Length: 310
Image 1: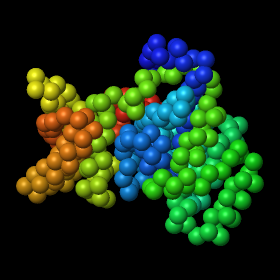
Image 2 (image 1 turned 90 degrees about the vertical axis):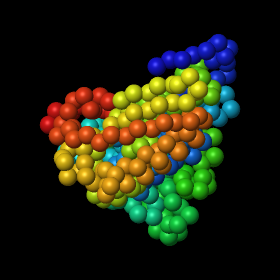
Image 3 (image 1 turned 60 degrees about the horizontal axis):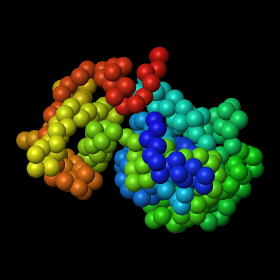
């Protein structure tokens, strides 16, 4: 995807532009870091693992350098077809990138997942930048031992200790990344924060609110699609979305007693979309049952995932 402008061409002598993949175990804080690096909300962030289903690109500027971040799904042991597609997307993001960041939760290291990722990096013969997250709350002695152990693998060119939540250490990390990007023109306009289509971003916002509201009852059995997007004469936007679930019992959970759950989710999503789009939003949500949507090739295409064979 290339949106070069005259400014980009003029800057081609001094400008840099490159792709950076953020990989790690589920819940390592990748989406939170992406939002900090970009300076705006482009990735869905919840307390649940595996919320990032497709690679979301966030775009950051550092001086004359444009950094395009690819936030990948967490790498874990896949059990279902959807899991397999997510893991393949994660490794695909790493393979295509100019620089790979491996993010590790220093407070709660997921040893099995981390070993799998280290093996994957070795198999791809990739070097990465190690980013130890949550260093503000991790045990200091345990943190140093983890850093030394990972450094001894020989897979890392640099180590950064950060807090994605507070932003501590993130500016230093961004400056380092900028210096590692190849010379060349920018791929996107200077003021663009993400290359995710707005329809997809709007669906992600609603899905985040559903994740937060439904806790452990439902989230991995649902997906959200933006069916229509209409800009009205007064500048407001009318958005119609469908929440797909796999069974009637799940539809009842998504609607809630007297429709209260869907009403609350709609209100929270609308408020965030209005802030993001800087205009009034009319949001209409519908819940539909689509059995086995997670085995439907079309749904994967909508999420930007390849449909894996069993």
